[in-house]
Image (tube, rainbow, N blue to C red; front, side, top):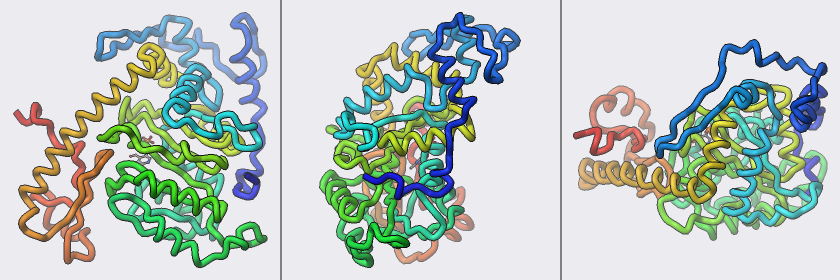
Length: 397
Ligand SMILES: Cc1ncc(COP(=O)(O)O)c(C=O)c1O
């Protein structure tokens, strides 16, 4: 893949920050090294000494004085090594990406930690999307994506979708406006980026089938598109085996995947990940160097300690518990929808196979904004019923 052709001028112009490179060298050096180089504050001046955090299963995460000093200090822009190593092993285990053993230039799978997947998404869009570019996505989509994409001045092209996500035939139809032979011509207007939420889409609750992913991937090959796979609800798929991801099909190195720990460990810790071809992940890291510098060292160490203590099996057991919680919430919401709306023929919906969202289409009302804001608030009907907000039966009791 010629990754240079996908980069915006801003992204292509990014250069490594000398100070950030020093931080990374310092981290690989023995603790006895006294660095006079970068502006790292002396942690002896910090007011925090140590801490221990009790995990619900009784385990303790302990930050002694030395660990606390590290937790409160600057760290590498790509993420702390032990968290990255753990996550790379998990990604390989879950997705078996074909790119794992490629050379760097061929798009070897790489990863970086981001401050929530939102930071990753925003930086990926800024890396790839120029004003006037045509960007493909299934509508309606996550408002955070629109908030990041719209200011870039691109044309958002809606691809038809249903409860199984993006419809490959619809994508083919949209793409038929262009000739694949024109893709690499100068000033070509052929889209270069396709964005989708493959599981439990926000707000539609749609989840893509394996066959649809395969068909969309083939079209992406034909038109040399990059696929942005925004998958924060991957771990909230209700049925197993979980659907294969775009990352798992990526023989070319054309998939950039964003993962999130927000829905399964905590949203306030702000831990997400970008996984994709090394030449593109490197560009995201250069952007991080120039903006947040890195995700909080403290929260990365906290999550890393938890995951190393649990191992992959313990982590997946925890995920199973979270899935069961949301399954109950989903079922409660579905039975409420059945009870209140079913016989009336005023609305339709599909049971989501993943995630937190039940999307209810109200029939015969073109714009439900007024209905919701003026008539329904505080009454019974909300267009978007977020079943994760619904009280559990224990809370109701
Ligand atoms: C589809 C989608 N992508 C990304 C995000 C951002 O998640 P976070 O930044 O908390 O990882 C969300 C949050 O709700 C989301 O629904």
